[in-house]
Image 1 (cartoon, rainbow, N blue to C red):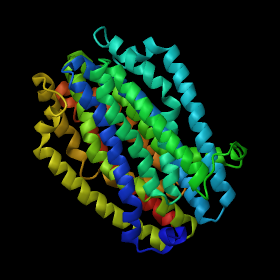
Image 2: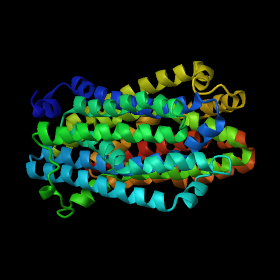
Image 3: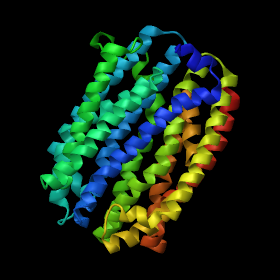
Length: 442
């Protein structure tokens, strides 16, 4: 199929389906990928193992912060360049994403391995969970370059109109992880450390697949070092366009650390429960995030080509899809909330905490996709700053004070509603800001 037909002239509903469905599948694969770790660790029957994985979750989120910045920023920059017919710039963007991801991954590995103890203490690890968390962190550090690059590459490959290939790369890593998890966790008795080994191997396999795509299949993309450059606004365009998503993930990591520090005062059972709830609630969030991310190349291409009408049609149609999916997914989780938690662990205390926390977290499920769509629209039109501000508000400036405030006023049963409260504020602000920016931009 001709790329111009898909991006510029195909019926919007069909183009959205063609781009969004593989993206949604990739997102759900990511959810399964994350759920698998917690699920297989939970089968050990040891809440401390689950708590250790929960406490180290901010590390993986930080990896994703940079992966999302390079991936989403690179996807936006590449989509615009494709719409403007700038072939060399597309190659420069894809090459920059490759080497920037690898460099940042190596830096992360060095920092984590050299500063293991203070990092894990900051994340809330105590005497009961420190050694378990240390095993996970050691092995996940070795995989940092591959984890960041494979995730970033999936976004850039999607901007090439190759949503199926992007999905395939994600599935390779996930299937490998799911197969290897029980082998290392239970078979070799490695617990949380086995989870990290499986994750690292899965991402190495995904990286090999994307290496093949860049070198052998793509006509537009390249990872040749001769195209690698930070000048000519490559670095600034990629990082500014991807910054909102990166800040979103980075602040999620920070807020997760703070939440773990608050919850550990009530014992390790609530920490284990929130780790399960994070993974379970990802299904609702990532389902809508997948829709929003999937159409980002369509938005960027339409804006780059000056096609205002198509941009707005894609935006409105995808928002309707997000609302429908959000309502249905939230209803499903509400009715099956206890079986969902029991799927991960059999400990009664953790289950009771988990059911209450899951209800609190999925309150914003029906509308969260609107926030992701508005942020992607801003990023696709070069309005990175307001999208960045929304990310900062949702995961930091608003959420962190709300967590401390609700904990002081209502204790454990109040703090778990902090995320839903800030989500609704962020959604409302995104609607106001994007309407204002759309009138000025389009």
